[in-house]
Amino acid sequence: MTVRMRDLVGGALDQLRYEPTTRRVRAEAGGAVVAQTERALLVREPRRVVPMYAVPVEDLTAGPVAAPGQGAPDAPAGTGFALPDVTALRVLDPRVPFAVHSTPGEAVGVPVPGSDRVVEGFCPADPALAGYVGPRLRRSRRLVRGGRAAPRAPA
Image (tube, rainbow, N blue to C red):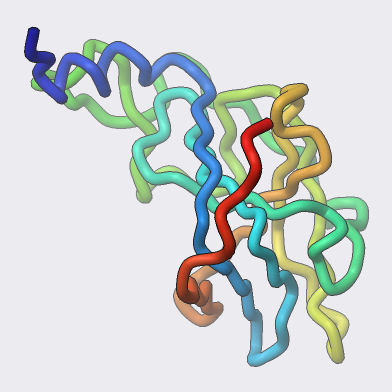
């Protein structure tokens, strides 16, 4: 039996989705490493089409701090853009700011070593993602995906 990918993807857009990756991931900001891990997850919030890398808190160079400014705003049902060929839901594509979230969680700050700067981060409030933070990386910041990490033992 075949499954059209559009139907498969469109049917899961309203759910928080994640997938472990075997890649080594290093997040940099201003040339400083803010995270380095072989235990990253690719996380897609409900309705969001572009994933974020989430890393274990213990793999951050400095632990998360209180988010500067306001907490994470919710994405009301009308937020986003139409993608009628895939779903009736309005999707959150890269035009929707990182600070807008469609799943419960906590906005945090990720300190940049050697500076007073803090990168935005988000910790989804889901038991499967407990202890993980997704740092926001803008164009001036780099996410380096290295080679494959050693295979993980099944959970």
